[in-house]
Image 1 (cartoon, rainbow, N blue to C red):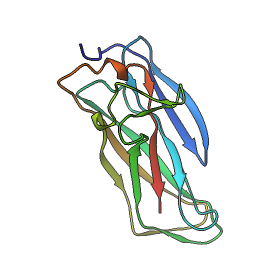
Image 2 (cartoon, rainbow, N blue to C red):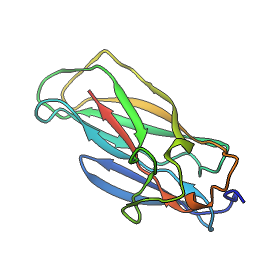
Image 3 (cartoon, rainbow, N blue to C red):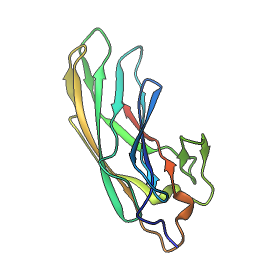
Image 4 (tube, rainbow, N blue to C red):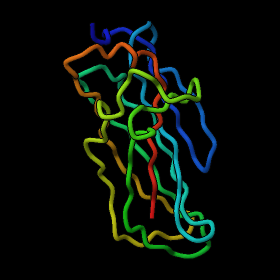
Length: 159
């Protein structure tokens, strides 16, 4: 039996390690989407803030998530690219609500289907660049019930 269309979705938005949980819908059987931000570069440079998913994820659906990359340094920096992925251990997705990787739920069922952001642009100190992700929960020919009510993290990295 697959995951039903009623459930609780939680979005985790983060910037530089701070996370906030937002309730998107209420019931019992749904995979939530979320976000955690990370930045790479020398010294303080980029902070990434990821918004909540545009709708709950169910098997066979996708949702949009907006994000903002901010230049936290004191100088103009070039944003080369961003990458995004569901946080997982290679096999299982991470549930930020429980702080565990979820047995029986496969990381391969979840993907970032699109990442749209300006790249190769110079960003002034304190300025931001906006991006949009499309995240998807693919249908599998087996039960996906283990993925119910999981608060997923989507990790966006700026370089």
